[in-house]
Amino acid sequence: MIPKTHPAKHFLLIAGLFAMTATLGQQVDIHKVLEDGCKNYPTIKAKAAEVASAEQDVHASNSEYIPKVSLQHQYTYGTSNSIAGAFYPNPAIISPSGGIRAENTYTATWGSFTSSLLEWNAFNFGKVSSNVNAADAVLKSNEAAYQNEIFQHQVRIADAYLLTLVAKKLSKIQHANVERAALFREVVEAGVRSGMRPGVDSSLARAEYLKASLLLLDSKRNEKAQAYRLAELTGMLADEAPEIDSMTFYSSLPVIRDTARHVSSSNPLLQVYQTRLLATQAKSVAIKRSFLPSISFVGAAWARGSGVSPVDDTFQTDFKSGTQYSVYNYLFGVSTRWIVTDYVPIRQRYRSEKFKTIRDHELYQEQNLRVQRELKEFTMQYKVLLEQARTAPQQLAAALQAYQQASARYKSGLTDLPTLLQSMLVLNRAEADVAIAYSNVWRSLLAVASSRGDLTVFFDSIPR
Image (cartoon, rainbow, N blue to C red; front, top):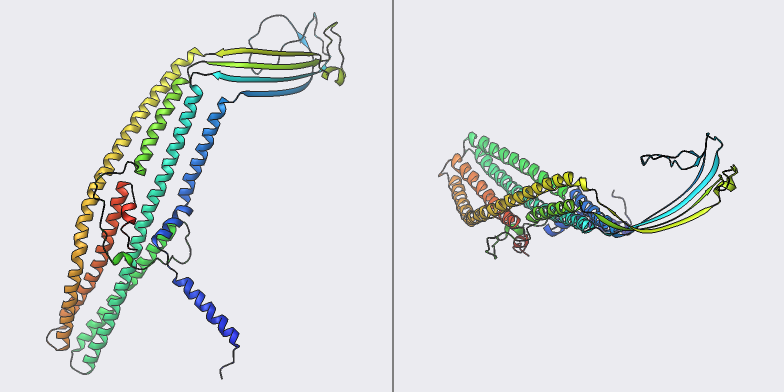
């Protein structure tokens, strides 16, 4: 007896199953995969953080234009003995000022000191501006590296997408081959049971079916592996690999509308090396100008209190007498500083940076030669693979015709089983060759777009 179920429960169950089916069947196209990958992949986020860090370095370099103001206040408790004579002012030494007496007095008193100092590096002969330019050049270099990482990651995702598609297509081909082998096995076994075929045909048909099953399992394994790699590149690796869209890449072959054979001037990879060269040049200029002097405006004000009387050198040891201000001062002036002996080490550092400039220039030339060669090579490969893809369907049609003829002749007893098995093998290989040929054309077009530094030629060729 079947238990009764409330109609509302039936509705909820059907709605849940429908929603689950819709979720599982939801497919993502290549544009969605690219968007997710560029938004979530850790390396791209790391490059974005480097750009943000370089922006802060530019702000820090610009802050050198701002006058420097320092404030300090202190209370002290100590003795005040001193003698006449010069001393070398080590920055770590305590001030030696104090009363000059015949004997040391170890009575300690309180003291106070407050000061403010303003320094404005008004004239620096381009030292600050060169540091700002160097920081800005580093920022542009990091931005170029960020854009190149996005570009290269898009290429990796698109290639993984195409590999996943061909793996999925090959699985479908092997599944059809298994069904064909199963049907063929049933026909052969029926003939063996009726005594019209020898028993060995049944064994051969079963072996062919098992071989087809093994090929299907291997195709499924490769399909899953490629799908997981694609999921990794999107930055959202889950237990289940993403379901990509239908086989639109196998409905037509791409055609390059732009026949220009030149590398884009905005090639992201070349931009990395170009901006790196400019950053090195800007740094060399900053090093060269660091030798120049600086002219600063200074202003200061300070107040001081002491427990030692300036009149009769008597001591007041209480806190209030020592911390009340007794004298006040101010100062305005112009200061210049030029460490002439820095010329030697700065000159050596400048020479070192110039050699780095030569290095970066040659590295740029190397990359330029490589992408120019790759563009020529990939364009040539694209043309050859396109011809192969146009020929592959003809091979498939011939293989299908041969299989149909061999099957009909075998059923009529006009040919033997090995001939039919060979035609099945040729048909399966021809089906796979068509899928691989189409995939190779799209992948070669992607390589052409990558070497150009512009993926527009690839995306414009995708069927809508």
